[in-house]
Length: 522
Image 1 (cartoon, helix red, strand yellow):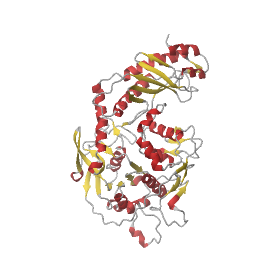
Image 2: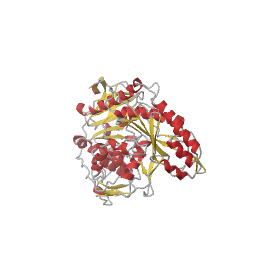
Image 3: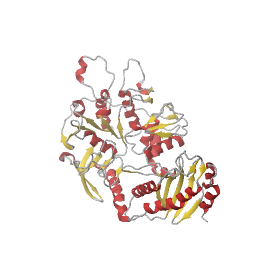
Image 4: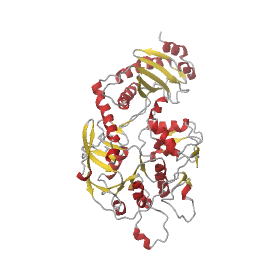
């Protein structure tokens, strides 16, 4: 008799906690070795965790295992979803993982190292909190082997385009600096999405075509790739409504990730250390140096150490810019529609009626920021103070880009970089949960609204941020040191024995930390 089967028959009908006898138990079933890594305490709790190890030889055509892992993850996700079914109360009978989007990232559920290691959730079945041993047997000895068989029934030819798409995008992104670029949009890319929240490309959309003055040819091992290069400096994307301005900016924003074949953005890449900035009325800030933007306030608030639980649109956006620069972000992405416009530009005609000025705008700081290595891409419907300050202007018309040569005559001021902050105390965040797009914990006086970070696109990424905040002690480190620790060791995600985690950047973690009201910084 099989080892796990004997345990299940022994505990059948007992109270749910008897499932703990499975913890750490291993068994070889067919070609797979199964092991229970975690056992849920209740059928309504987060499901248990099981791992499967399978012999697997990494193909020679692959330069990076992440593309292969991503390919397998999608097949495992689909197979588990097909085998998952309700077998009792709560999460009984569940088999699964978080749904992947069109991005290719590290996910700890699938890892190639010597062999193929797959982790996933299993809802051990019960009714009235009594163990359903027969149902658990069927899951372990029938459903799981069948799911693994279907997931791993593929040829190298099936996997190769996926892995090569990952490798090409990695290579393109690695060459941006050599070409003096912060982003690249390949000719023929399909940028519009099927709907506002959709991943799928819009059918019949206009393929992207580069205006000649911005055309760049990048040599890769896959051949020469042509497209539009966004140079370091200040770039404005202009045009009337519904002609593709934000669509282009969003493609640049999401170019920090590699995309799966068929997405339409497989040749759109952006430097990783970029940040989409927006106004966030009501957010908390702790000792952020925003004096380069906000100064001379009548209340005499120290904007060199700006602290509030209820920032305005302008102060929240100024804080977000400075927090990003503080940890080394080199590209700021800004859309006029989601910004505090009084922080973006100032109409100098107002000098005739205004005697006091308290805001030094982003555009006034922009030139010195660019000279310090902080590039800006900004979308504007037609605001001339923004357009005339740019090095390059792209006008979108019917989703087609047109280049405009604008010679800026605008006056700029000196940009004051933020003072670096050190995290003194973050507090212990226990049992942090994901509610929609919020991170919540009993230790937090308010949720962390990570939806304001538009570059977090998968629930698995939110899961990993919550895990990091719950299990890390960053006290005493500078914000830049925390970000660097995460960016320098992305493979740490594979050490987490809880599936459903997706790769994030140091910036994404700092984004969350900066919005915790209880933190103490210096």
